Length: 271
Image 1 (cartoon, rainbow, N blue to C red):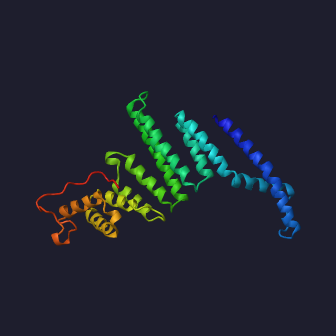
Image 2: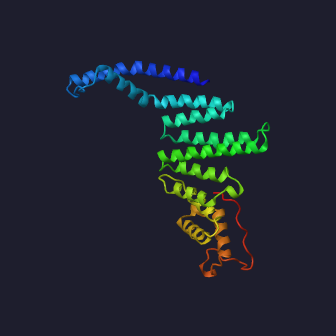
Image 3: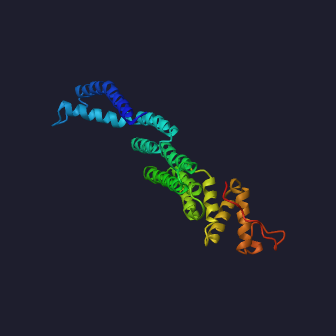
């Protein structure tokens, strides 16, 4: 759907909603006045009062409805790989509903995953240009998460979205395991966070040079916290650090059968 048609539909929705809601609000207002429950607003004309009621209706009652329709229109732009339009659509939706996690998450996914991958497989552009465009959209997705965190700082899913983006959308030397670990830490400290957030924090901390003792301490704490944390990856990291940090045998959780044999280093972090 073109931007002009979107605006036309939005205006029609606003007018239709206002036409239904404003007389009802006016009738209720008159009843409250008659019952002595509300005083007349000094200095305000009837037209001004009606304008304020209409504005409240537009900004309050319609935001959720408009955001839902705009989300559908954004999917149409997505199918056409019109990434600039997709970005504008989700920025508008996020402005309408800044405290709805879904719109921040879908918006960043559209940018950092769908758009970035689209350029990665675009054979019509020179490889260097396609790579730069793809990385630019990864940054657009990251920017959406940063903005979402300003509105939802205590939603663990927002911090998880940041951790996953940092882990999956950056390669090689660009991947900062300390930042990823911190994002998982912030997620784990939010209400309702799932247990794997702490484990993911620990796994990435294991990959930060100079943080080995800190990582080992955290792994031990998680192991002691409950059997739900005693998964193979966590156990493997504990065994690895007990060997590489030369933890005395009596202090180890897993004394080796053969002290000369080093346990294999765990692979990439998994739950």
